Image 1 (cartoon, rainbow, N blue to C red):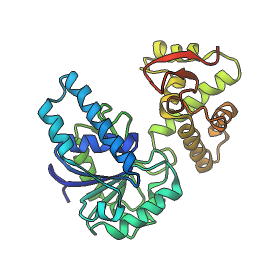
Image 2 (cartoon, one colour):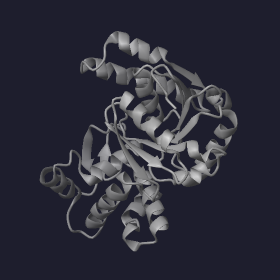
Image 3 (tube, one colour):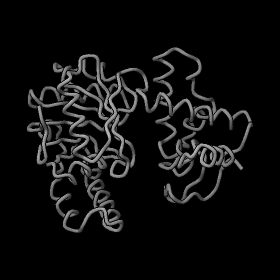
Image 4 (cartoon, rainbow, N blue to C red):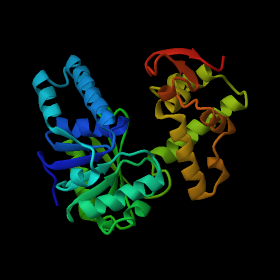
Length: 300
């Protein structure tokens, strides 16, 4: 089983992750159908991809001709069944909601070609459970890209209980075709990336909650002392505090260990709608949702 340059890839969801995944596949010569029920979101995604291509041009990563080719490789489609009808690979990048993903995979299974591989960009939801919503569990796999997708090299590839070795090898090869570094892991709560990252973020939040140190002090220690490019609290804002809470709940429910229990401060902030960059305020306050321009530390 091979999916080569020029292959047909359908990406479900035109949000931050979906448009980034579509961008990368299209940049490397794949024909991409970007699917979302919202035509406004699809239009916004194309605009974002165009702007991100301009950034790549400014950094001499691609040329103007490559930008045109990338955009020409993307077709938008509001109907899911139509969008996956000829796909060799479907990558689902919808909201991190288990019930929604199960519904999508059941529908995709009925509409996509029988030999089509179904991948989820989920950061925490069980691939085995997703696969069980389909009649092709051996062809279901996790393909967890990192944000921002055009920049970050890692793809965390998650084998479900029934994922075939052939499908795993195909997705590993495909990730390399995209200039990414694939890391294969097994299907347990949080996989590897978030099983390690989220407890660190949660501990940083607990340290703030308990008055051990302030926001900037916590982030500075981790940046300068541990060589992290971004402190854990700023990273939490970037990921989205609601997403962090959701993943911690998956870890807590999956392992039943109190060490994964979300910090009450995180729960309160999400309840108050302080979700980080996307809401303009989290552990820091941002101007017009600009993640690169931190205006103030709201905990001072």
